[in-house]
View 1: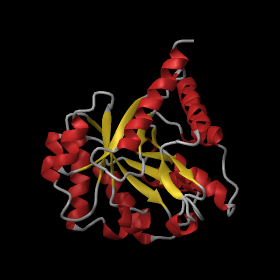
View 2: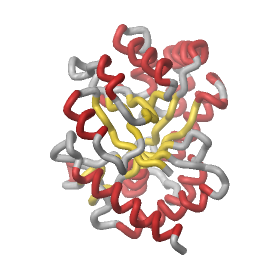
View 3: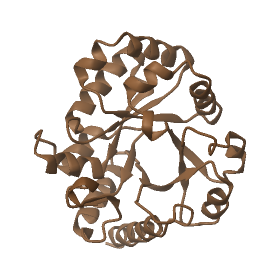
Length: 263
């Protein structure tokens, strides 16, 4: 198990997060505007696990329409230079993706350029099961070794609490999402997780340490079968540079993990 932080391509974030000796790597968080200084990639002193396409247009359907743009091509180039995968969201319906000529063209581009995709489950109408179906379709187009599921634990819980679709349990979801390129966005939520109903998206398990323990124990057991997860600690913060919530989560992970190995 390795612990990673979200890290924007901003000098202050990189300098502080490079100094944290209990963090193993990063997921590059792209904004999609002038804040992304691609030249700063060389200053990252820890391993880069993945690159997240800008949130406002990271659904597969959106990227498929945008992949020829100058910005998108810079992102794909960075993926190839760092030899890491691109995180995209599964927000569209499975049948919409299957019927999209834009997605077909995007898949051909991804396959021709040898780029890896991590398809992240989302919430509300698109939950863990739908994301797995979308992954299967994209894998059939691109290749088995280039497309992986990425499990967001907060999104999984938000899908369950929406009651719009029957979802998988955490243990089942981890088993279905596991791979030899296994990335998890590790976070919790309060209430529905949605601001509209007073919830908070992406908390650090303050009030749900039992769930954190269960998730980590399942991952610890999976390591015996050679499935080693990279945990991206994706917490809501008032200060994304110093990220106190993610740092607290990192220490709690170490505390639980050490308790397993001491047994």
